[in-house]
Image (cartoon, rainbow, N blue to C red):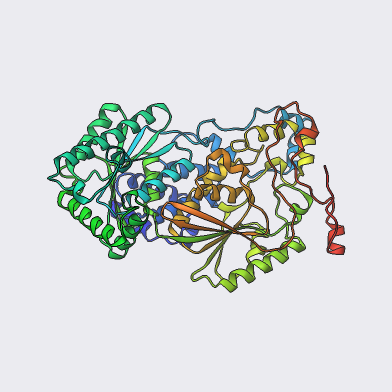
Length: 577
């Protein structure tokens, strides 16, 4: 059957069609075929469709763990065994199931098992590289924003990425920026300075790749074939892979916005009058246009590149292979740098929150229902145009969002971290039944995986398509859970992976995140409804032989019973410690 038929069929798939198709194993063949093609060409499959397919396969309840793992590995170009992924995606049994399978020694089995933690590097993800990502394009095409957001995304996924901005090296050589004459092609002295700046940035990037990183992002213009050839030769000599990203733009609105952002943020124009700065910058762009040579595959046959037109409106690629490069491609396909606002909230206080129990799928408490009403009233009064609501598939998030006048989508990918055999336990019960597990989790909360459950790294893996969608969307309210929102907020706030499990995301608080270029600003809006505090700091003593008092020192207070709560509506908080 001709290739065009497969491409035409898959490019027209809707979400509802995916649900139907995923019930048949033939989808595995089609998706694997298109995924392998997408490593070389974007023809017929967009980044948004790729995102839909991967998201559905990751969350598809109609697929077995083995099938889901196989398809995901095809998506990422990896065809090896899936033993660890199968273990990670198993549905966690209850305590009763475990005891049924191991009636005599189930506790000993869990206690004596080796700690379920990932590799200490990064977030536990596979480390690729070294890779140099070099940007191409004239000023005001969004390269710097794209470079920093790409590095942030790669760091969040477990790579070790850093941006090296050529203009910063130029400013070290030329302390005072005078005018656009610095960028004239016939200004040979200035051309030499700019060349030295580029070489210095490459050398620092290469040294950093050698010592600690695996993705260096070179934020510069590389506007001529000669400049790109120099970068290519340098990377070949150094021994790292090279990927060019060319950012092009012919949309006047985007250009106008980008120019405004440059004039506001660039140190070159910090002390220059606005009108003079605008005139100078337009002359600078004109100088670059006179020298600019877009990437031409017929003349530059050896380079690999991704071309992005109008900030991801259309994307073309050449010789892009491998999981890391395809991840970059997926990000650029969903890139949307315009300022936007996203909203996040945990569910209202749940019955398990009141009792201090982990996970579960319980209803909201009376105070949780009151918060749901307050949240709905607030969001409906603000009247956000085109608002969309995303919740998990668990009852407490659905109940929290049900009064909001906006379309809601329920997503398995934003379900709470599954605690496996510890689901439904209090921290006190976990310390009593599984003290070794409790200690292991405190030692490395990011990478620790509950027996038959998940780790924070597992959550980050299933949130990958959600983040790409959030990069593309605007005016979204995500109603989810503590661990999930820690990971999402950690991404937007550019937190280090090890910091994610200890970000404080309180109950009954609406979090507003506003993006401005590659910076994000967070505002917390308390809606004045009382609730328990579920935040637990890392204890000082995390050793396996610690006392129960040491282990439970930072456990938040909670109620002992729901019955008293439901009868009176109010009761004093019973402190356990």
